[in-house]
Image (tube, rainbow, N blue to C red; front, side, top):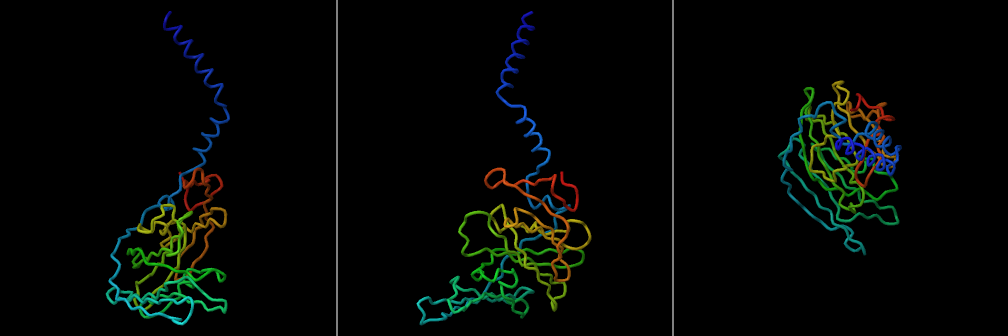
Length: 263
């Protein structure tokens, strides 16, 4: 009898508690768990490539002041090394500056003796100030009988607010005499460039590499870009992200379309 009375009391308490918690909230939570998935670059891959962190080469450094008579002098620093297969030379300015006459001091990088402007590699918008980047990490890996090195950069003028742009220069060095370059920019929700570039992989297992390009200027959409023969080819796959809490991004799995079903 006592057990029956106790069960009735517990049932009444549960009904009262439920009255303060709307049923549609329960459905909303269930729906969110069912149709959402916490975003990370690892889940866009079927398998992670064998990235290996390598030490940045030792650079010989030379500096010279340019526009010495100007009110805003600038310093050009040239970092040069000869030990890696790429034989990197990096031309870096101290100021992110251009004058009203249109003088733009663009940084550049030399790889195997050939020079490339940083703005051109990463497709900086023409109306933006010149990109000022700093090398932060390097990785090497091989895939499908091809050899790659990824050079990671950080923005020297990044103010620390919002998500950090992740600048990755992917170099295919299978043929050292003909290096294929891919300038890749995406967002890094880990705010850390010293990590494996898991935004690169063979997502659809077609033998070629793909890149997950996250652009919050287009409504937090992650696009799939195929990397072939030095070209970037947009694929019909995408993820729609939303920020549930500050810094925590989720995939809208109902309205996204990826290379394989997301769980």
